[in-house]
Image (cartoon, rainbow, N blue to C red; front, side, top):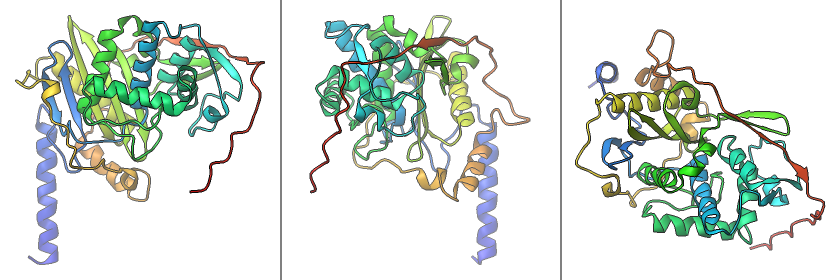
Length: 355
């Protein structure tokens, strides 16, 4: 083929694919497929999946495991919701901080859980880890031990907040199992996942989970974003006595992430995603491939063209297109107050020995 003929053939192929995707009741696997998993949370049967065993960078969905380890410590009596959590020097050095918290500010563990989950505060996640273990590394070992116990065979954690680290990876399968176990084992702590915003010493920080205020029945759970991961969500909703878990990884925009999640949930509750014979724990994790790095597509000059292609595949919520976020639900805001820790001395961390 000549170059012009070949280009025309590719254009016709793309146009046909786009028309089929828009017409299909369930989205097909697009080019640059990103993982999706929809599960009946009661039967554990898979309702729909795309690459659910492919490794991915979890970003702040990591904090689901941080919460799981905290909930286990609460259950065992190691800590209480009144246990103080103090911002250490290590905690205040984390990236992407919105909390406004400074060294020595202290809150209760209860408030810290709201800040970590609803506001996705990276600094607070590290402070929580250091409050429950001798150091951050010790807490991460607890996270990985829990991952083994839960059968998360495609997961490894390197930190408690999900900031980029090549050794911090998971799969849609593992996140679905983790989310369902958090909800099943600790229903008394669902309130932490229902907050749509927090105020920290008067400063409001909103959750990025739009399902909480736009999709009725939403129970939670956690969103996350890094340039390397795209926009991730682990969502759980209940309607008419049925509970459905959805995991979408690698979405390009918040609109895409929220609309696709709501679409899958709507299709599941409407019976358009019939249960398969496969249970979620039978999904095979792909240990033979490395996580995709989405930075070139999302955070460079390539992002405009890539976002346009994703908008064509997933136009829900764009002008002139149907939205699946149709409900208006009052948000739940949790107020957090902090105080200085008068007993904490500001001792600089020792410099790391050169390798």
